[in-house]
Image (tube, rainbow, N blue to C red):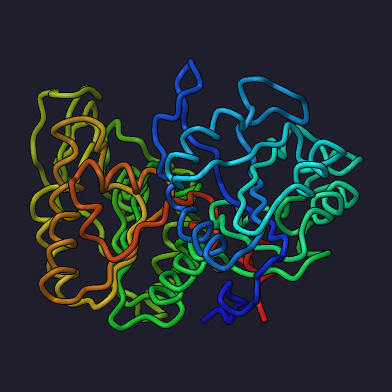
Length: 405
């Protein structure tokens, strides 16, 4: 369980509070926000600070301008939608450091909200002078000079040591914002101090992208279900034919090692027992359900079969906590979304009826659960991609480390 400093632990009245948010939102070609989820996620923290008479300074990155000023990457486009959500005027500074930013910060009154320009307009945000990973301390110090208190409210960038995150925390006391608190509390509940038995469901295309995740989970879960294209690598390692399916045959030894480690840790591995195969990778392609040893050489495994879904449902029934990452098949293409949809809906049903704690996140997970119409039924869904996966891998996240007591 992470013991971290929370926003409620500090008096913010009349203090300049520097808040790291994630406003890297999708926009159309005209610069209009097409999904305000990340703006809305920051509202509880901003409104809390307004209520407690803080002077609020928001900072965020947008896109990948690479240390150059790009009009299309300006935060200015967010002023109107953010002001609308907050129901108050939000001020804007056309830079995040320097005289224009200093002047805007100095003008703040208690309860005011100011958004600074894109932090990635400065190379010091993400790179050292030598071009390596990290940030430029002088840039971070210039950002920190705007505030008296630092609030980190963007778990989605917690896995990165950047000027606007770890760099500021080197100069200011750091606290978790309300969105960050919610994220950390739910993830701790799911993995650090879970109600057992705890089950993990990991899907997606490739084992190679989730080796660390799988190795960490088998030592912490009671049951681990593996689906999607990555399941093919495990099936092939066990001697099953996978035809023309996506499969990393070169990771046979890795797959066998993970299964061996799971056995030693008393973690049950669940793999597909039947599959949906097709000769074409397209929506509506002719397909069939078949056993593991009945996949033709010119067929691809594109989804888990109905018997597999039933076994997953039985495993969910036997669990008190479920951690979900990744789809069970090619969910973007009907009918190869069936297993993902059915399993997700069943998990959501168990949350409602039997008190299952179901936490999900990372990669295509959010899209898959929304597609299934089950997202609202889960206990918690993290919109963080890389940060969620690194947390699940057991790695220390720089943006969380700075918050620890």
